Length: 86
Image (tube, rainbow, N blue to C red):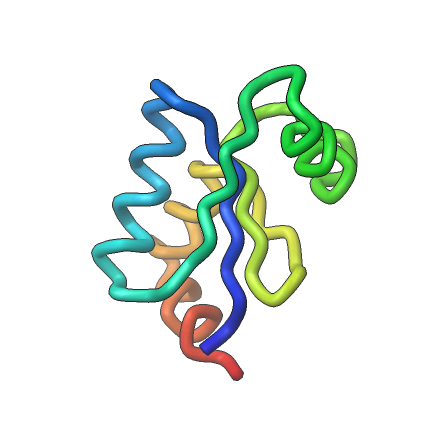
């Protein structure tokens, strides 16, 4: 199973939707609480190439994007292969 990391913040509907999809897929992931102004948010922004929004999702260190990109991968049938890759 790949290492999946998702930077989130409380009360974020996009974060909840992305976490919900990953949970539905039955994959193990690490959710990192990254509210605005926190060191975790700064780390997410750095890793995401300057993107300041949450969620920011990484699979095996590769930046996937946010909720919209995750959902697009799902619609295109490209998410499951990423989640099953070793």
